[in-house]
Length: 325
Image (cartoon, rainbow, N blue to C red):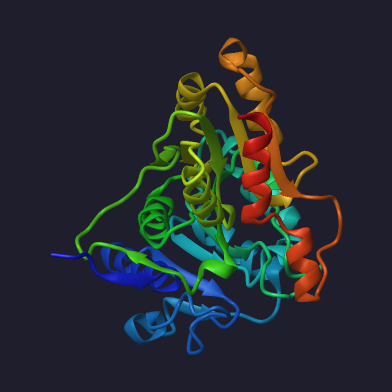
């Protein structure tokens, strides 16, 4: 029987509903997460299922949302805090970086801080410089946080369920342009462990590591390259911290070449860390310089044509692979 197909946003809502039904300590908090079902529809139906005691609409205050969630987590609850855009996590960085990430350590291992902070990330829909950014590298740089960035409906459901159950604070970034993308998601219960990458496509000529919006672009680029006789292996880290570098290195040892594709700014991006790790641990297996496909260090334009010019596209991946194969 063919698997059912659901949207990325529907997979998010399913994961939250299932975990709230499973554990009465889980609750949802954020702006418009209740009756309106979230700014991008990721919490649709949850308010109707659980009511206003477990689905809390808040004022427009990211600082209050994360601060409330942290206090609840310290008291033994398992909050899911939604920030409407990753860009606005800049407003609550003190609560995230100086409080949430460090509370367990600074308290001698007690209390447990089990909480998820969700936010749409990345561009591609013409929202401009203040609503199109991707800050995963910021959070990967902070000890005490786990950072997850799923790229498919299947992955977002399984990883979100694991994030909600995890005893640590998890930054859960969802590429906004993928909310309307559908994919196979089984109805039966499943979880995907945090910290495990997946080989999305096997190949022998070059490894491409990609996540977020760049994963579907990479899969399309791999198909184009296959028509020209270049066999690409595609690895999706899924969790950026902790990073499954072993799966990436195993792939590079097989192909001898590495391209890293992400939509965040190129300078000091997670791609740079992956390149450094591969250089340190698998230098002798490299047959060509590691290449990065990323957004140049510019502010994202509102104009859709200019935005497309700035953000990395399939053609950029194809050209980069050809340059080293």
